[in-house]
Length: 261
Image (cartoon, rainbow, N blue to C red):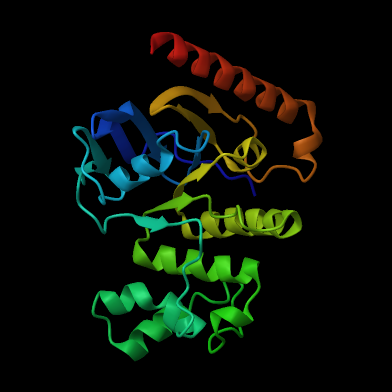
C-alpha cells in the first residue's frame, strides 16, 4: 500500500523561532511544518541547533522569538503536548517492559492495572508480544527501541519527535526497524519529525527533509518517491541524485552562512 500524507492538514507548525544562549545565536528565524501522516527529517551536523529546536517544539524551552502550533493551537512553551524520544531508549532497568511502556499513562494518573492493560494491548502491533514481564536488559537493542517508541506513542498520539532514534542500532537491525516503523506509523496515523545526521537514512525514510545549518533552515528537499520505497532504492540513480543534491545544498548553505558571518 502506498503511503500518502495529507497535502492539506498541518499537524505542526514552527514559525520564525529564534533562540540565543548567553548572547550566542543558536536558532535564527527557523520555520518548518509537518503534515498529518508525514515523516519529515531535520538534517544537519552536530551542534547545528537541531536538539534546541526540538526542545522548543516540545515546550521544554521558550524561544526569544517565534511560535509553535499543534493542530492550529499555539503550544509555545507548553510541555506535554507532543511526544519526544531521545537518542537513548531510557528504559528504567528496575521496571518490566510493560511497566516501562505504561509509564506515561501512570504519570497521568491512570490506575496501574488499567494502564498496563492499555499498554499491553499495543504489544502485538509493536512486535513486543511475550516481553511483558521481561526486564530491559533481557531485550535486544531493536526490541528496546520498539518499547521506547511505544512508550513515546502512548505519551501523545498526535506527533512524535524522535532525536536520532536509530543511531545506536547496527546496520541490519536499523534497516529492519526502519521498515517496521514506517508500517506502524501508517497503521496508527502518526506524524513524525525526526533528527538525523545520516543523509542516507533521511532519504530512505522522509517525505521531506529540512537542512538545518548553524541554526538556520537552509533548504527543503522533497522526496518524490512514495513510501514504502522499493528495497533497492538506496542503490538507484534517483537515490544518488537526492544525495548529491543534499550534499551540494549543505556545502552551498554552509559557505553562504560563513560569508554572511
